[in-house]
Length: 148
Image (cartoon, rainbow, N blue to C red; front, side):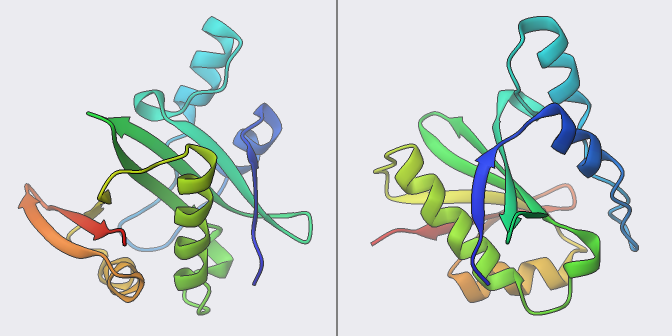
C-alpha cells in the first residue's frame, strides 16, 4: 500500500479523535492539536510534535507524529482501527520513517519509539521493521532502529 503524508489539519484531527480501538488502547490523544491551534494558530500534537495524517488514495488511514528530543527523532503512530491486523503495519511504519528522515533531513544514527509492553502486535511490527528493545520503564519499552 502506498501512503501519502500531509500536515495535520483541524478536520483530520477531529476525525482521528473519533477513532475507537479494542483492547487496552481506546483512542488517540488529539486534544493538544486543538489546544495549540487555539492558542497559537499552529497544529502541534502531544509534546509539541509535528503531526501528519497518512492517506491512501485520498482516504485517511493513519497518523504519524515526529518528536525531536536532544536532536533524536522519536515517532508516534496510529493506523486506523479497521486497518489494524490486516498486514499493513510494516509498510506503514517503514514509509513513515522514510518520510520523516527525508522531510526533516534527519541524519542521526537511530530513531526511537516507545510502546506499551502489552501491545504485542505493535511490538512484532516494530521488530519486523528493524527496531530493537533498548530499555523498559513502567510498562513501556523504548525501541530503537539504527539507520545505515
